[in-house]
Length: 263
Image (cartoon, rainbow, N blue to C red):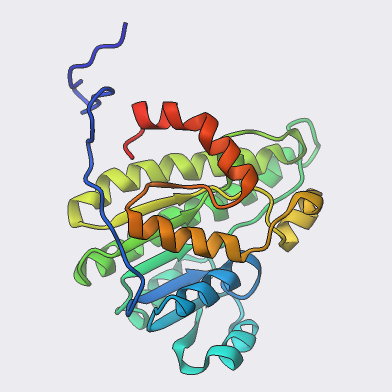
C-alpha cells in the first residue's frame, strides 16, 4: 500500500497538485531556440514568430547556418552561437540574450546503437553529453535570466523515446529518459520562481534524425511540434505530445503521469 503522507524528501503521491499551473503566451515575447537551423528547431522558430513572438535568438553551432532564417524573418531572428557540448558558448549567450523569457532547448544528437553494439558505450557518452548535460547547462545558465524577466518558460524536447525504449537506438532512448527525469526536477525547482516548464515528447517527425533512425515512413511535418508547444504553454501543461504516435503513447502513459508526476 502506498503511504500518502509527505515523506522526508517531500513526495506526496496522491496530492491533487504539488506545483501550480503556469500559463505562458508567446505573443510579444523574446525566445531562444537551440538547434534552430533545421528540422524541429527551425519549425519552432517559424511557429513562434507566426504566433507573435517579437524576436527569436537562433541558437546554432555555426552562425552562418541560421542565414536562411534571417532571410525569411529579417531582424526578428538573431543568430547566436550555442554548442551544448561547449559550456562557454552557453555562458556567453546569456550576456547577449539577456532579454529572453522563453528558452526552447531543442538541440540533440542520436546514434543508432543497440546495447550490444561495439560502439554502445561511446554512443551513450556522446548522447549524454549533449542530451542531458546540455539541458543541465542550459537550465543553470538561463534560469536566472528567466527569473529576472518575470519567470517565463523553459521547454525541453524529450521525445517519446524518453518513455519507451527502441532497441535500434537504445542509447538515445536512455539519454532521453535521463533528460526527461531532469526536466521533471526542473519543473519542481523553477516553479518557485514562476517559470513554466514543458516536456515535449514527439514521435516520428520528418527530420534528418528520423531519417537516421529509419522511421521516415511514419513521420509527420516538424510544424506540428511548434504548434503543439505554443498550445501547451498557453494551457499550462507539463507534457506535450505533438503527433499521432506521440498522442497514443501519451494516452497510455497519462494515468501514471497524472497520479505520480506533477502535471
